[in-house]
Image 1 (spheres, rainbow, N blue to C red):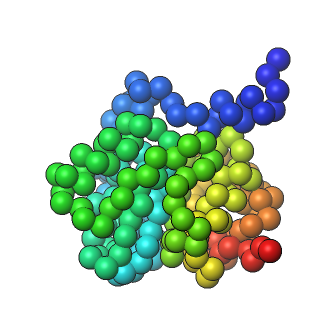
Image 2: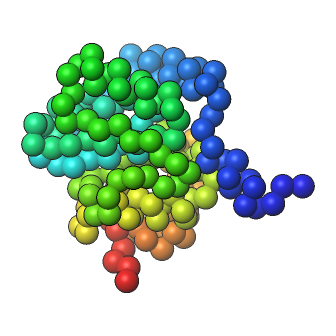
Length: 189
C-alpha cells in the first residue's frame, strides 16, 4: 500500500513522453475551437508585467502572453516536463519571443526568485496536482505582494478547487468567473 507521501510524489511527477505528446495534440485541437488569446484577454495581462505561465505545457498561451506583456515585460514558462520546456524553446526561436524564459520545475519548486510575478496563471492543470498546499505555497512565494493568481478548476468541480485554494491558507479568492478564479495572496510572516 502506498503512503500519502508516495502518492503525493507520484502525482507531481511529469507524465510520460507519449502522454505529453497526446496532451499537446489535444491542446492544438482545443486551440482551434477556442483560441488562447480569447481567455488571456480576460485574465488581465498588461504591458510591462512579469507573468508566470505555471504548467505551461506545450506553450499554448506563451505567444499571446509575450505580446501582451510587451518588450518591457517578461513571461516565465514553467513546467515540470522536459518536453514542455523543449516545446517552449522551439516556440521562442520560431516566433522570436525575446521576453520569454523557459523554467524547468522540480516537484513543487521552481528556480524563479521570490516576489517576481505580477500575475501567475495556472490553466488546465490544477486537477493533476498531488499536493495542492505545496503547489499553492510555491506560487505564493513567487508572486509579488499585491500580485494575482488566475487559476481554473482544471478537470475537477469548482467547489473542490475552491476548497484546495482556501485550505492552503496563502490565497484568497477575490473573484470567480465562469472560466477561472482570480486569487490574491494572503500576507504571511
